[in-house]
Amino acid sequence: MDTDVLAGEAQCPGCGGWSVQVHSRCWRILADSAIGGQQTLVKVRVRRFFCDDTVCSRRTFAEQVPGVTTPYARRTPLLRGLLERSPWPWAVGRAHG
Ligand SMILES: [Zn+2]
Image 1 (tube, helix red, strand yellow):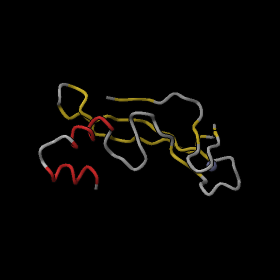
Image 2: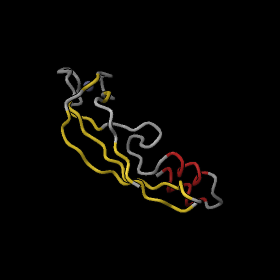
Image 3: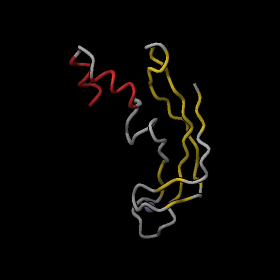
Image 4: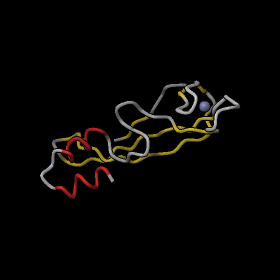
């Protein structure tokens, strides 16, 4: 499942400023469980932006896709919720690890 993000700007998580200067693009592969309980890989193209604010400590930042990606998470919120309800404590530990 491929998902492309079409918004023309992104908000810097460091200073809250908006940027339209795209630095680069990359694919992120996320695990999801959208289809019939089967694990699915979701491929999301995210962009890295330059921050315009010269005093901001972040020179570049990757955009986030609400509901799909969260910072430093490789699983979508949907799959994480399933893991937290799972009967296997090791799975829960890995979800938080
Ligand atoms: Zn910034």
